[in-house]
Image 1: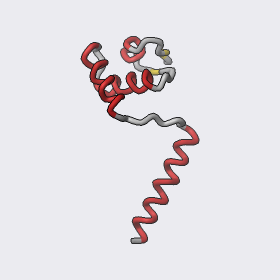
Image 2: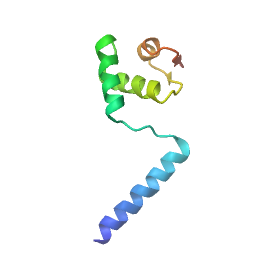
Image 3: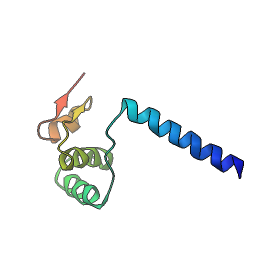
Image 4: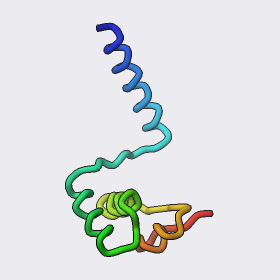
Length: 81
C-alpha cells in the first residue's frame, strides 16, 4: 500500500515540475482527435504531427516547430532551426 502512495506522490511532483516549465498542457480529447484525423487526411502530415497541429488550432496556440513539414502544413506556424 505504501508503494502506491509513494508512486502517486512522485507522479504529482513530476506533473508539478513539468507544469512549471511546460505550461499549459492541452488535453487530447475527442475534438482534437477528430480534427487531427481531418488534418491527416488532407495533408502529408503523419498522425503525431497532425495531432500537434490540431491541438494548436483548437487551443488557439502559436505553433513553433523545428520540423519544416509541420511548419509548412500548419497555417501560421513558425519554423525554428
